Image (cartoon, rainbow over all chains, first blue to last red):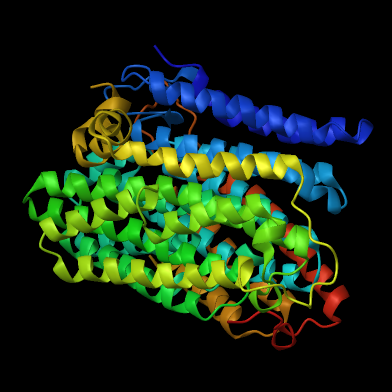
Length: 513
Length: 112
């Protein structure tokens, strides 16, 4: 029995995007409410699927083309533990960003295009996460990419245009790498279905060819995920976009179209090899360390946050790499599971606190009209809610208990120590301390440090919808710590880890054997 | 085999253009060259020596057919490519209006 809710996750935002433009032409007040309704429904469906997602109902085959002799044909939408989690992140952060935009975007012109592009981006990301075949990942990747190019440039000033140009050129190169890799995969395997490709490759493959495909895919999606040698576009794009979009890009997009796909392909499509595991771990550790070092010197708050995104994503990639390394050696699978769980947990947490931090940055920009840390100060008095929520997010990202960031970093570091990667564990701890230092600077210069004379206008707290989404995210930052408790972890995080570790589970789900 | 190598050369030509050209429009053209080398490669993967159109003939079932799936993929990819190129050109035109130049060396507001 196929679950008819799964395709709705792509169809509703897609329909919402186009209806927003058509109806918004006649009734100008309606686009924001339509986008809110779209996101609300999407969020509801994703949480429903996360809670009630059974095993037998988790694949939807478009057009109903059943597998023939165990070979999958047609387009599969796969909903499993891992994608369920990412879908929830996408729609939840998306919902709060739209709520925030209701006040924030009123300053810009052509609001209805903003909401339409926003829904389109959500549709693309949901599609990437749900898609069970590699060509559809490419198609949805491009849908989300094109809408995010447009959203980054939404201000159409000099900086926005320059940022979107960099983003587009690098994004296009990444897409061609992915397309080239898809061509190679189809050439060798004669199939596009991820589970099927695995079956074909497990029956034997040429080593050089296999490595070429892996490297092409890692480069392509690494560019999308802004892992360190490919990160050049991220600080510009994420800092130039309107703040709710920065929250979406940093909090969700780089995960859904970058990290998620890398983890999915390298665990479920390719066989795990030690060489690839070492490469991924190195890239992760490098992003973690270099990202935070680049962030220290930044005085533009959004740019500082963007560099921290690179660094925090490094944690996720590194812990996935540690898991791969242990699985490739075939030793201590329970430690590998712990490392992967930690990585996925940190990914969820990062969506919450980085989304919140970008919304805070947007609130500061909205009220004080500046993004430069030199020019602000003493905002704690005039903007108490922004100050309090950003403190929560800052503590969370720096890994201070009882906030969520502490638990995920703890799990990652414990897993690294148990897997005898002492150097990586030490590096993770040091990076966490540097992160703390960097956020202490942010807190001090933005909210404490006395009144600044440079800001002449009276600073007021931001409107209610913006406050509402910031407070919700701050509460979520606290609540997500509960995921570390054994009972809740088994219900939410363990299914995601299982699908990545258990090689047969993913393919049996699709071919029905 | 030659066709595949030529295809790869085309890809590298495009990549070279993206890296070395300084004019934004030329970068966009180079990206299109890269894009089309990918399309060519995809179309080539479906090619069979002496293949015919994939219409099953009951009288003569042992014919070689070309693979129709890459063609469908290329069509999809071309449509996506059109959207990307249109988006890129729109941004380049906007940049020309703001900066008054196509030279990438002059467009350097953001750094660090």
